[in-house]
Image 1 (cartoon, rainbow, N blue to C red):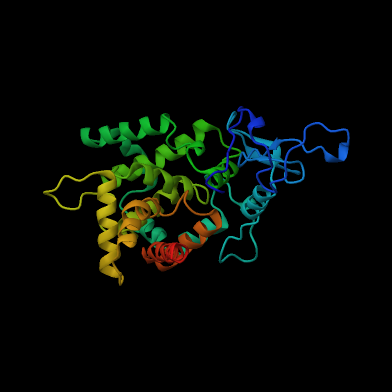
Image 2: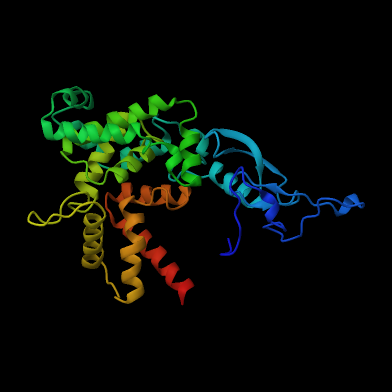
Length: 335
């Protein structure tokens, strides 16, 4: 999208856009020659103002007014994006598996493969407590954990875990997976998983990142397996203190914690050619992608590939290699 391109939100006046924002042909509302008429339409996914030739497709998209999927006019670019999402191939499964095979809070082929590749099943078997016992323990926590749980429940009830907070493609993916679930149900699933996570790890630092992780994993597996996968990631895959304090005598919170941890890990484990652009990239852009483990920042099919690599190798390197690939691509465009 060009910098000077006008994007019209739903409900705004489209008449100030004089030509199609895809083919650039001028709109003609009235003409004796009917063949010359080119009327304004709007893609309900990207909200560009388009002509009928460029917006001749229909697809189910989430509208900003209702938050529900409705069959609407979309442009060719958005139709291709929707087709790519629907035809995503889930890796390392016997044959092609459409995104249609995954459902919220159910164990799918990709979820089972992640459980088999990672150590979460072993962690589950060796744990002194089961998931159901952690659920029961939620009622018997100390004051500190109780305060963290209150913060969690407030965040979920305020909508910080709902699909509508995410960008278009991940939002569509979540809505697709949650198609048969009620809002109260998926909020309950998230609350259960993250409450048990807090009881076990005694931390709720990086709440938005933890919510994104739980949202993504619940698209491929049930509550119990999502919990054990998150615990395994926290205890064995993610760098130490990824969601916690860097030093006991330094008060650091939120963004700064994650930035310090990520930069430290990045520079200690990889050859890093320091320059102003690279440092700025790490400070401004890299933190958002890595702290959310790419969730909501790259396409769903690419996200599945990176997570599959991370689960298969039981190591954070897959995330860093993805970040380096993006960094190198960015440098190529900048130079």
